Structures are given as C-alpha cells and as structure tokens.
Amino acid sequence: MFKDKKVLAGGAVLIAAAFWFYIKPNYMDAKPAPVITQEQIDESPHPTVILGREVTLEHKAGNAPEGLVLNLKAPASAPNYVKAIIALEFERPEDPWLGVEGDALTAKNIEFTHHLQHEMPKILDAVAMVFGSHTADEVSSVEGKEKLKEELIEAINEHLPHEKVETIYFEVFITQ
Image (tube, rainbow, N blue to C red):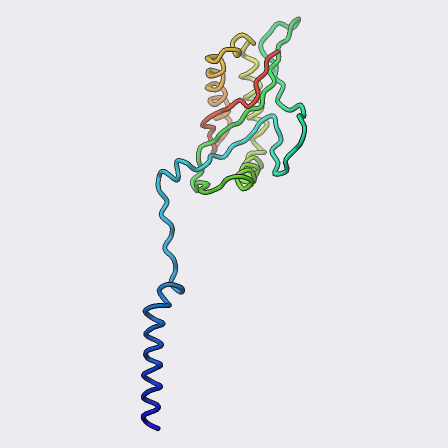
C-alpha cells in the first residue's frame, strides 16, 4: 500500500511538471503586447471630415445633388459660385487607428465628425470667408486651387483649439 502512494505521488509530480513546463507557458501566461513600428503608424489612416456630403455606413444609391455652394468674389450683377465637397484630413491622433479600414474607418470618421460638431459653424464660416475672397479665375487654375487649400488650412486651424487640419482634398469642385 505504501508503494502505491509513492507511485501516485511520483505520477502527480510528473503531471504537475509537464503542466508547468509545457502547457502553462503557452496558454496561461499573458501574451506580450504587439510591437508597433513607425511604418505602421505612418500608414495608419488620419481622421477625416467631409464638408458638403453626408457620411453614413449605408450606401446611398443615386446621384443626389450634394456639395457646399459658396459665393465667390464677383460683382453683384454677375455673381459667381463654387460647388465643392471638401475632405479635411486632420493630424493623426495620439492613438493611431492601426488596422482600421472599410466600415470601421467610416464609423471612426463619423465619430470624429460628431466630436467636432460644436466647431462646425466656425469651420464653415472660415471656408465661406476664404472662398468669398477669391474670384472664379483665381480658383480655376491648379496653382489657384493649391493656394486656396493652403489658405483654408490656415483659416480653419485658427478656429480649432485642439485638432489641426493637415491636408485638404477637393472631391468635387465646380465653378459657375
């Protein structure tokens, strides 16, 4: 009987040792945090706000007339307008959006837009003021559009206390 207890104890020690050395390290210990490289951070998407088009997770069919319609500098007898959809790309947040794409990216951008909702009147005012200070001829050339983008970034960033616009893209730009 004493011999059976020694065999049982020895078997228990072997099972405990096998568990400790083979199973526990693979399944029970915490996994190390993934290493994030600067390249991954550089490739992560920036928060983007679209002016002149509603951004939703549902796909809208059709060609609805969207866009901001803004006055350009012109005589009152012959007014000029621009219709534009403008994408404001902001600086990367402190926690980069690694691996975010598709609907998840759209959802994050919608959330970011809601975060900026209280600043939207200031942003739209800055956009209207910058467009209103240019003629149709000035904004028709590539150089004119680039200058307009620079002025828009500067004017919008003056009104934003925390977030800063880094790049602007015109999705639609029609002058009349």
